Length: 72
Image (cartoon, rainbow, N blue to C red; front, side, top):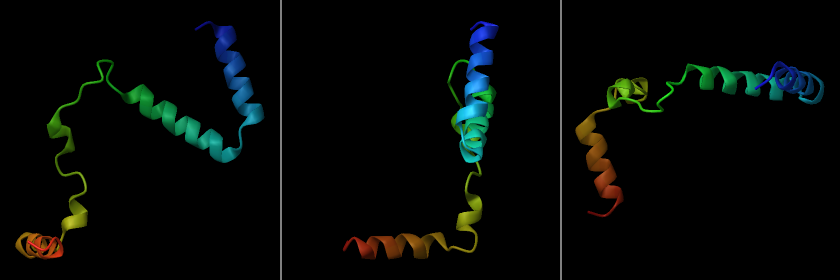
């Protein structure tokens, strides 16, 4: 991409996007910039993700409740 294209895109974003849209665009660009070029990830990167949701939940009771809900 040439500098002219970059400057054009930047100016359009500044002029045409709302503050919320600019924030969303910035977040998307930062997220994209942090991605690996290959696009591949290791499953271990998900370890611990969302663990706070399950704090204080008894796994056996949860599974039994879900099974009951399905009528098994």
